[in-house]
Length: 329
Figure 1 (cartoon, rainbow, N blue to C red):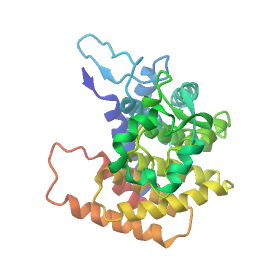
Figure 2: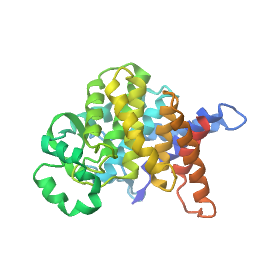
Figure 3: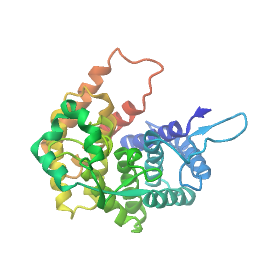
């Protein structure tokens, strides 16, 4: 079985950044690139399953795909990554089949979303600083989870999940779904997912620990560099489109105080891709010299840290897309 769907997504996502950054036929062969982009996007749309998911593996010997009825949390994130890329595609190309595919994915994601909020005692523990020291209290994770002190399974917020399972409701999947829905609304003006946009936004914020980042899953205490970057990007895009939401703008400023301190030295490579995209979105929307300083420092540190360490087999998606965001900025 060959894992290739998400790699295709990465391949056709790269030229989008090139188109926006270069904006010149001197730097890209647009006809050639656009042909490859169309082929990849249309293949993804054609292969979509009734569930709204996209086949993850493909057996070239018999033409069969792996069933997607019971995927893990990490694979749900990759599924939503495909939707994120298709939404990005629609920013540049009007394609009915891709638009329909994205609508089906967002509809099914809405139906699979679970309620989430912060409980009263949880909020007290968070404000007390108890959750700041997850490396010390991580042995208490399971009891906290069992007694409902890591999240409340009620409320307005929503997280995208699989099989109504909070342990597979990874915040990265909610973040990328939120981003795809925001792009869809911005491109089409169709408001059918706007209520879910608000709910997914609240779901992400429910998984933030005040003065810290985002927990990597509802049943975990730990943070994730990926989730911090993906959630920051989704909320940055949300704030850019729904600028009247002053509470989210305030939340972002407080979140960024923490992210700038944690990631400013560029040592955490898993943050670079999503973090750079988020920072440039924010820098294009708000006037804050800290964002400019962060973008330049993060890029310099990332490049310096990779010198002499590249291997021919390394996946360059994160580096290319992160650096393309810097160029376009």
